[in-house]
Image (cartoon, rainbow, N blue to C red; front, top):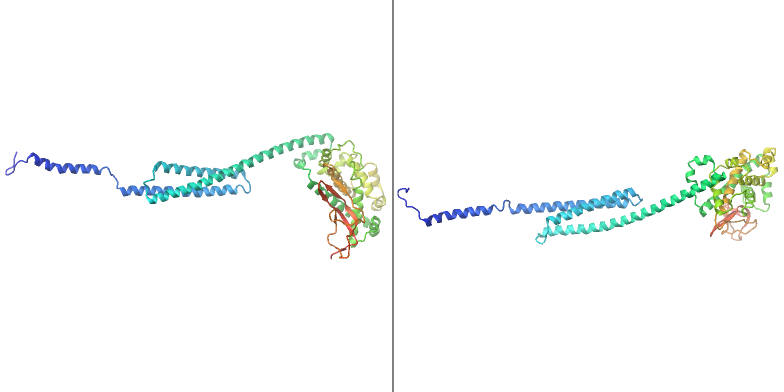
Length: 436
């Protein structure tokens, strides 16, 4: 149908009119390929990179903290803390490794990265280098831990061997009746046989023996005073040629008297007492030392009054305490007669002597435990003083310029030579002055 006054369009005109519409539709279809603006996508990539860097720095800080804990766990050495810190370090390393792989998966090529992205990549590489350093240090610590673990295993083996030796030694002592039942049940028994035979142990025994001489001299002097003895005359009777710097120093005369009697026969293996079937080997002497080390001497004698130790105590008491001295102390010789008949009195005076006797007995047992044995040497009165082999019991002595080397007045404790070491003799020097 044709409207009035109009003409029908030609085919060419129809194509011209419809053409622009088709082009418009085509342009609209092309715009649908970009659903979001390009600027927004770039911003998202930037945000993702910042999050990644933040995680890396956070992990590095955690790794540093774990590494510090690992260092602290080594001083002092604590295996549990080391293991816990090592676990933390490994966890942080794994986290960093995961971040590295995540970054590579999302960014296979970085050649088209912007300068800012290149800067971030360089920071990542720097942190990775730092991570490698930590990995090397962790391996170093793991090696040290393995070394310590190996040492622990060796110590455990040594403990097992010592325990086996202890059990064998206990069995021998029980067979010989030297180990009391009370000691078997005591807590000290656990550490009783862990004693090592060393020069330090012998030096400590020497100090104990010297102290026991000093301790026994006190009640001896006090009883002499109470009995009305002239202490000056008694001291001069021990050694008349000594010139004392002070009157109080005459106590060393009585200590010298005790020392001379107690150490008589020390150089002999038997100590002037019959062995009674006890072993005379180095190991045997050490076993005897251990057997009486922690026991009360009266308890030892109660179990076996006629043991070798009992005979030693009996003979030394009769040598140290003169009959006249004992008679003046107690008004009779009943105690002396009791000792001579094979008994061991429970008086306070005799028990004080037993402590002295035990310390000297133990020193002798220990001296013959070494191979070669410890040598004892005594200093004669009148000998010239030698700082190599002697030590003055008085420390504040004064030597005049015109004086030559002072002379020994009394020996209150002998000296000893143990392997290459010298334990000096304790002496009192005659005719020297003391500082106020």
